[in-house]
Length: 475
Image 1 (spheres, rainbow, N blue to C red):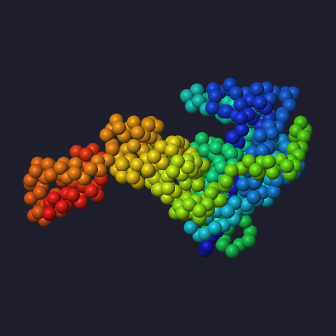
Image 2: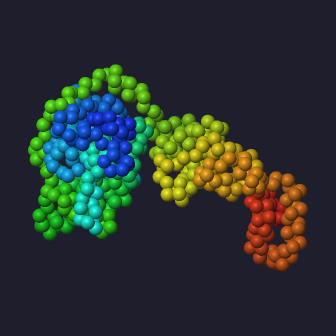
Image 3: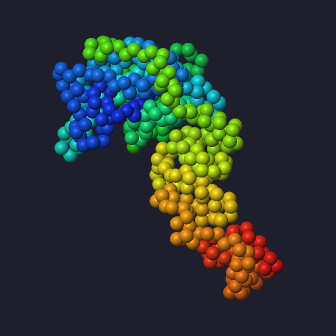
C-alpha cells in the first residue's frame, strides 16, 4: 500500500526589535536571570500593556515578503493556560483577527518549484524559561524572555516531504533576515518550528490523525523527526494500532519522538479578546512606508546577479541566501572586483574559512575592499593563488592589513624570469640525482625539483613560469 505524508508548519520567529512587545524592557534575554524584567512583563496585577509600534511594523514586513494580505484592523486575545514560566497564566496572542492572512512562499526542490500556502501570521509574546537543576531537583524560572515579541507563521498543510519542509524554512529564514524582521538563528532558538504531521493512503482526500512535533530548531533534527514520525504512523496504520492526536517532543540523542500531552483544541485555551489592548488599525500609508523600507529581496537579487552581472546561477543562489554574503559580494564589486571572480572567491575560499571557524553564513564578516584587493593582486600576477589564500585567511581571521601582511610575510610574487632561471639552475646543480632520474623517465623527479623551487621562493613564484623554465633547462 502506498502512503502519503501531509504536513503543516507553525514557525515562531523572535523579532529584531529594541524593546519587548508590551513594555519598554530591552528585547534581550541573554542577561542574568530576571534582570531584564519589569512589573508589566512579570505579569503584576494592574499593569497595563502597551503595543510596541516596531513589532507591528515587523509583522507588516513579514506579511509583505510572504505575499500575505495585511488586515487593516487586527486585535489581541488572551490564550489562557497555566505553565510555571508564563507569568500572567495567559499568553497575549492573536486568534480572531491576526495581522496577516492568505499568503504564499515559493520553494524549489529536486522536483521543481512549488508554492506553499500561508494561512496566517500573528503577533504574540514569548514565555519565560525554566532552568532545571538535576542535582537539587529544583526548577527555577527566568522571566527575561517574557514578553519578547514573536510572529507565528502558520502554513497550510501543503508539505509532502522533508525536503520541502527544509526548503521552506531556508527560504523563510532568508526572506525574514533580508526584511529585518528577525535574526532567525535556529541554533539560538530565535526561529523554531512546530511540525504538524499525518499520514494517509495515497489518493485518499481525508487527512490522517495529526501529531505535532514541538520546538524544533535544527534542520537536521527536523528531517530525522519527520522520517521517524512518518514510519511510526505507517506502522500504526498497517498493524491497526490506535493513533491519537497529540503533541510530541523530539529526543535528539536517541532520535525518537515521545508523547508530551494530548493535543489541545482552541476551545481548551479559553481564548477571549484582550480587554486592555485596543484594536490596531493599519492604513495604506503605513503599509506603503514599510514596503518602501524593504531592501531588494533574495530572489530579485539572484536574478540581477545572473542576468546583469553574469554570475553563475548556483553561485548567485548561494550568495544571496545570506544578507552577509550578499553584502560582502557587493562591497567587493564596488571596490573593483570582477563579479564572477568575487563570487568564485566567496563560494570556494571564504565559505571554507567560515566553515573551519564554525561560523554560519550570517557570521561571515570581512571587508569587501580587502577581498577585492586580493583578487586584483592575483589577477595582475603580483600574488600567487597559494599565497593569496594565506592572505585571505589572515584577513578573515585577524583582519590584517593586506599590504603590510604581504611585506611582513614576503608574499610578493617573483616575476623576474632571469631571477627564477638563476635559482632553478642552482637547484639543478644541487640535485644531480633528481635530474638523472627525470632524464631516465621518472616524471615525479620534476615535481620534486618544482617543489624545491617553490619552497625557496616561499610560494611567491609563478607556478606556470617555474614549470616552463624548469622543463626548458632539463631538456
